[in-house]
Length: 207
Image (tube, rainbow, N blue to C red; front, side, top):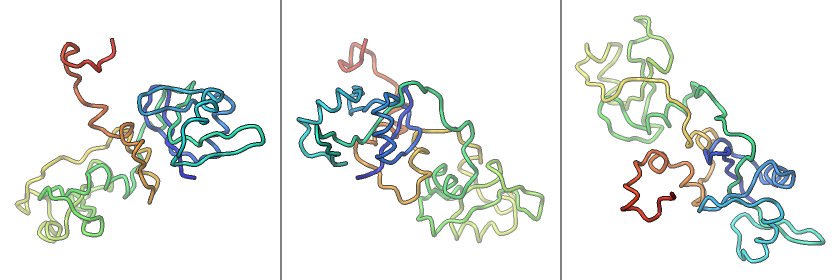
């Protein structure tokens, strides 16, 4: 059985929880199961639906009276906040924030091919903070050396900044976690930030 994506009441991804925690919350009506069409199911509804689901990626729990599918996604029934007002300043979150891209050449690299670069070098008073750290590939980092980007003749493709919480951070903070296909809609930044088409042109837009 795999981990489960937990959403807040507004379908915003906030946590990854294990299946035992999810089933306890479902039984006590603190969460509902969510499907890909944003439909919600309480415990009794989910027990009934489990009878016809068939193959379930997360498996089943069987009791003497019934079997119930272990869900892939649940949503809290009484919580619509975000879990963090600030994203922790960690190496993993820096890589995630800048999508493994070098600030100077704007190319994407493997984690092992990137350094954390102080825009204003530490020797010149630069701090280790969101506002002064970017990712740099090894060649650009060597070229910059112990200088500012301006002194090194390097163009910055983006300015260092502190990120706001996004749905994908719910997954990124768990190292080595495999993202399930059913989760992608709920953690995809493009999905949440996409400008909706005119309702006359989009028959899927709910009135």
